[in-house]
Image (cartoon, rainbow, N blue to C red; front, side, top):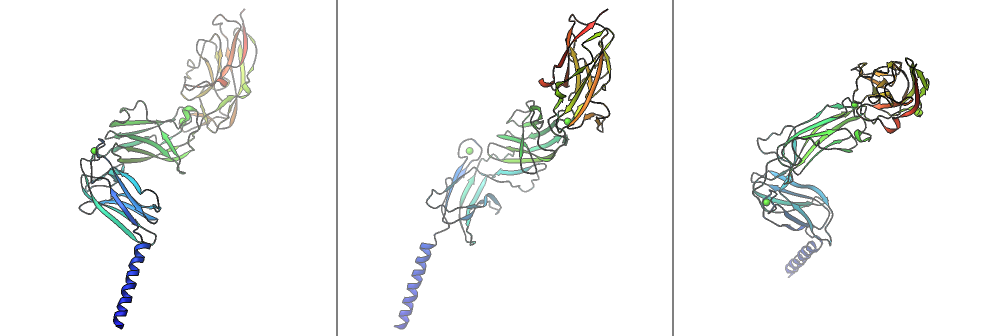
Length: 422
Ligand SMILES: [Ca+2]
Ligand SMILES: [Ca+2]
């Protein structure tokens, strides 16, 4: 009797314990489903994707992965923190056969990394796994077949950036960087961008003269001016990681990196100070020299490049910068004088300073340093009266050769000049 009573008590207690665990301890992971047991990830619109659903009763770290027959693991979700589902619809995510990058036996990729890759054809065990904060883990498994997968990778070959150091400042010397990359497969997107130390991204546009058209297999070229061509300030000087990132129609993603250093970057801004020119006369006799004096101000953090002839040089009116051997150089700033009767634009030009203020780089290029002023003088000796106008207007300009003559630097402080002919 006594023994029976004890047994009964034990039975009741056990039943209560079972009931308790049944009510209070809901399964962590439930309602796990894959909407298809076979997909053909080849972007043909048929059975390319399936939907995975699951429900969580508590916060958990959620993983979804696939095991092949050899037991190799392919990761789709790796311990991502998820809130409990609560009263909401179950979690739902589309799966297109693409998992974290992996390499097959014997594969060795050089110069690029596979970030996302489609599963190879075969039969896999899928695993949805949740771990709560106490370390309790539950998992649900099933079978998925992959067939007709488009497994060709959009490889990035020979990703190059040249030159490795460039100076985007419109001085005509290494103002542009060029990125080349060969993509081995038609693709959906191809991006090239710089990433700074603080994580800021700077997008680089594909060159319109790229040998292969966007989306096509082939060589793609990118031309980077750091935004300076449009007058924008470039990214700060420093060394950047340059990323090339391609994604194909299936969703496979491949990246390659290189580096690029920006030096002396900036938009050059120079002016004729106060738009003021001091002219020596309003009237000169034939054979006499008209002199001018003005001040050039480099009002930017960028050195501005210049070239000869030096201030003080006197031109005969029938000479010009080219006849003096000082031809136009792209990116160079020079002071010019133009008269209405002149046959070419600003035929007489001078460097924007003399040796007392200019600095020379290793290759002998001359620069007016940042935030510096320089006085420029020069003369034109009128040896004949070209053209019909007399008097004629003459004026000064500050020319950024092959780039622009900004409005503020054109037709500065005209003088109405009369040439006295005997
Ligand atoms: Ca398909
Ligand atoms: Ca430059």
